[in-house]
Amino acid sequence: MANIKLSYIIRRIVSAVFTLWVALTINFLLPRMMGGDPAEYIASTVAMGSQEYAAALREQFGLDKGILEQYGRYLVQLCRGNLGISFSIFPVPVSSIITRAIPWTLLIVLSATLISFASAWLLGTLAALKQGKLFDQITVGAAFYIQSTPYFFVGMLILMGLSFYLGWFPMAHAMPVGIPEGTPWYRLIGPICYHAFLPVLSLIVVSLAGRMVMMRSNILQIFSEDYITLAQAKGLKRSKILMKYALRNALLPSFTGLMLSLGSAVGGAITTEIIFSYPGIGLTIMNAIYNHDYPLIQGCFAIIALCVVAMNLLADLLYPLLDPRVALS
Image (cartoon, rainbow, N blue to C red):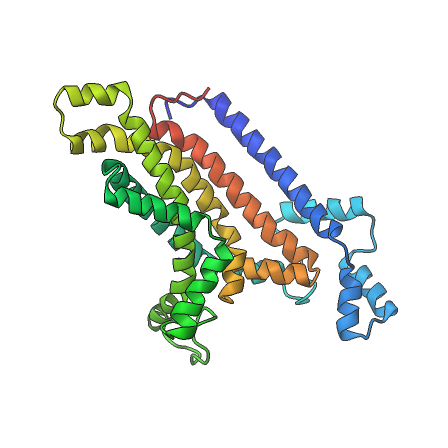
């Protein structure tokens, strides 16, 4: 941490806290700006639209208070670690719902992110080393083609081809239906990975292309630098130049992207979870929006905002360790 001064750390922490406060404030306002009344929605589904029942719900949920009072209670509860009670699954705490959903999201999104970055770095490096050759042309051409294809279309093609027509993988859910209660955890690993394969594959296919092209461009740019030319003039082997000089510098621009991807992994992939009916945080957010469930929407986005801000701060503090030339003051 010799390249980071204490004053910089303090400024970054203050900036992160301010950013988080802005995100949480927007998180409070957006559900209330999207229209609709949660109390009337619930009353229409369980009490034939009774206005008396809707009024009782508003009072119970605290929606009869002024917007500033609701905002103050919202911030106080967040500071206490209380995400509130779900409107649509009353009286289940929001934290319990999120705790059940997050492991499934982390399983597919973290797996896909790590595999995607590792594969992109490998393919991008190989494409750069074989610039202009058949391998480079095929990988770059395929990457641009995949990048131009909408994600939902890729996910639907994978689902239809490998699941609906070939029947190799299940079409929905995270686990087989009807597993006996008390089944040992180690017997669930295989079925869980089997159900997660298609969501992970779809995320890898879509995200791999852009990351691979960026890595290839970084490698080619670094090989045009003067210090690489000097190393080549000294007779160093290409493999040694790549490993000792080029690769480390080429990975630096991708590092921030990796950290932000890991931070946003908690947010899941809403489209993925909808297509594959996967019970993660993305599908939870979508259902909460449909049901006008303010606390659940706020709780999910609060966790996402916290993770993104925290990983961004961590990336800023770790960068000088990866690149000693950077001095943060």
